[in-house]
Length: 581
Image 1 (cartoon, rainbow, N blue to C red):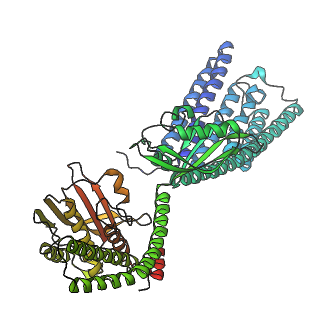
Image 2 (cartoon, one colour):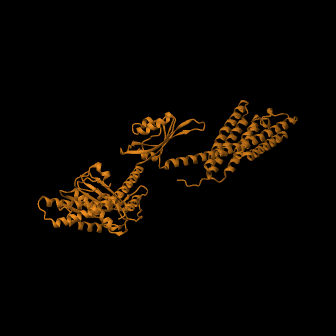
Image 3 (tube, rainbow, N blue to C red):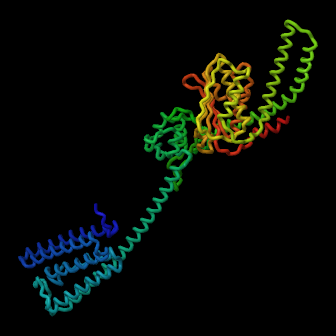
């Protein structure tokens, strides 16, 4: 490989190559024309001289090219070498073709133009003065008889001195004008070229900035012209609509999008045909990637030219799935606040009379000697009174949920202690087998020990009740890295999965399991899972439920390893306000 440092820039290299090629072509044509003229006059000696002159010109060109390759001369020196060589060669051609009166003297304009083009005004004037000096010196030598002409018949009489002087003057004016004009034209072209380059650079920068903005937008963007052809689709639009990177949408018509995105295609066509923008609204689309139905917030604007004519439309849209989820959370918070107020009222209005009723019935039971059906009715009253008192207690527990008192706890140890207590409780079904799979080296988590235990109790009891005929429950504790909310990215957390092989939960009930008072059990209150969900949320975690393909139900609790501080939500404030007991 050749690691020689480049002597010239790419621009200089191109200029030199172009000039060298033009010089060789012009020299060959000029000398060839001169040779043809001399051969017609049978001037063998001059023809041989011109052949030699052409060879000298080629040799000088080769030397210049060698200097260019080696890099021992600067770019300006190489150009001046070629210009001086051309002036010298032209002088010899003129000598062979009739001397100062030769029609070939006009060819001095060529090196003058080269000097003006490459070195602007100064180069044009210097080259013009050199060419004029050579012409005047040659004419003077010729007039004085010191330099014989190769074509005496074409020379003017020496006594007619005014005519050569006039011709010399005209040549000098022409040469200088050529140098000045070429210099000015070159400067103007260079100035315009620089201005054009600056404009192109500015335009390229603007294009790059625009492309960068469009490429990095979080909203989807589609641009179409008034002929209903898609011009631009940014990456966010592809991601939202579920379009693969390899699928090309640009250049397609809006009608081509109808098979996959009919709602979006209809909106685009409606705006193009009516020439009226579409204000912010919502549409539903079916994403091509996974077939999921997505709500889109869509607005379509008209692209207007300076003359007021419409050139196309631009559609901006966003996936509103998370927005709807937030709306549902707000609705849920309002519902919880209403439940808190209801719970407070129920507790206040029912618990006091209920306590009096229960006390009175206990006294009657002790004083009356009941038997048979009367005794069964008395026990039924006491049992249902206790059940009603438990419901009120659940109401109050849900309404008066206190903020967690964080401390560093060992999740595995906490779960094992809860399971040990539950195994000896009367609510535990002996036909249910419980297995625990705990990953070693788990990090401790910031949590309220009492509240986390309550979550475990509720989820274990829920699983046991689902397996009333017996079964197996597996509790797995592992580390995970997942995104727990929309605003933050993934984070390290501890995951606790409660899996049972009991009766699967109906699919239509899954979205409502953690809502207060929603239950699939005959005697349930619908508050156990709601309480567990609120506790996990207060620990900045999430709780999920799903039915697996092998007919199992899995409740998953994810709690972050790093403490981020529990924030008091709006529903908690309202509930604490109304639950004053």
